[in-house]
Amino acid sequence: MRLNLFVYGTLKRGQSNHERFCRGLISVQEATVRGRLYELPVGFPALVVPEADVRATGTMNYLADAEAARYNKVEASEIPSSWDTVQGELLVFDDPEESLQILDDLEGFQPGEKSFYRRVLIPTTLLETGATVPAWAYALRSASGLYLRGGRWPDI
Image 1 (spheres, rainbow, N blue to C red):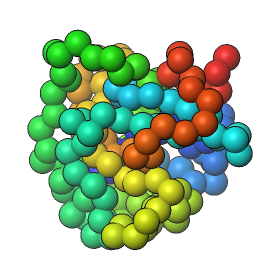
Image 2 (image 1 turned 90 degrees about the vertical axis):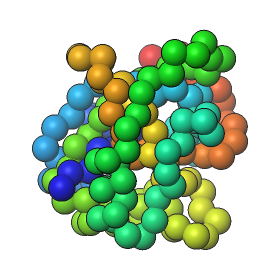
Image 3 (image 1 turned 120 degrees about the vertical axis):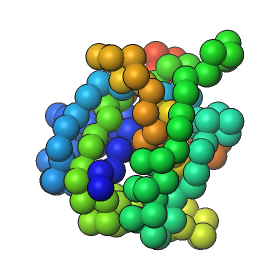
């Protein structure tokens, strides 16, 4: 079983948390999601996604979450949107139980509790092929911080 995770900040290649928290990685691909990106005052980014794109919310049953992503059909919306395209990477792990527990701890996500981030299953578009796949991502419920109009962090 595999875990698809869309990352847009410190877990991307070359960023501060990639080497330490992305062990067991099978592949990395450039990808995008629909949303808005903000730089928080503490110096890292946060993603806000449209509620219509949320297919599931993360639980503590990591294998069930990996299964949900595996069988959840997602399609890119053809409806024009006021949301941005957020640039990031699709990370694929082969150990969903271990990886999700470590990443949930890093991101402060605790299912069923008020957490800073929530883990959501959203449509993710691969840049190389244009295919849309379901992936988990850590997102805020509402806007916070400096809006990054270009949908990329760091904003270079």
